[in-house]
Length: 179
Image (tube, rainbow, N blue to C red; front, side, top):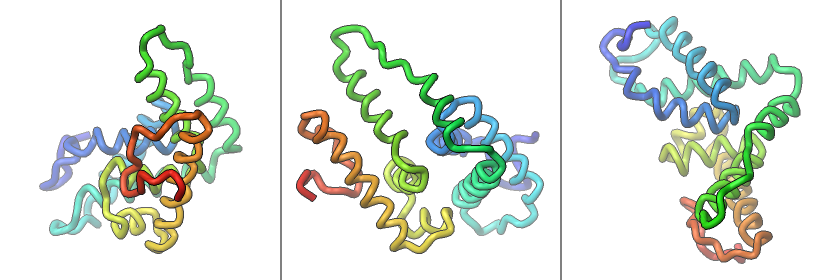
């Protein structure tokens, strides 16, 4: 596939697309397949892209819709979770407290329900506005905000359950653990 479709550069968006795909499917190979499928769709539909439009939003929306289509065809969510669980290696050399903590936090993020994980990833990691993320997910802004609130609350509960004072600020949330 060409680096560019018409007059816009898709290659510059690959890293962000891969990150989002990884948060959706939680498996490196599946994420790569998802990005490839989305880029094929983008290439096939490049004529529908408005030249004055936002390429990043357009590609993320295609990636999201491709993921939804793929999920509908999969047999069960348990199979995806089982594959992801096999890839997680909790063994870490001693003295690497920060690595252990990051792995725990990543596991807590990946354990969030899919709709909460999607919303939190788009807003906190990819830094889309609430409106942009809601548009990409095809939901009202209020629903997005509710999903973000529940995701942040679950991550705070994870922090509290592990007996630690939150050291990481949950983007867009509050450092107050009583919320």
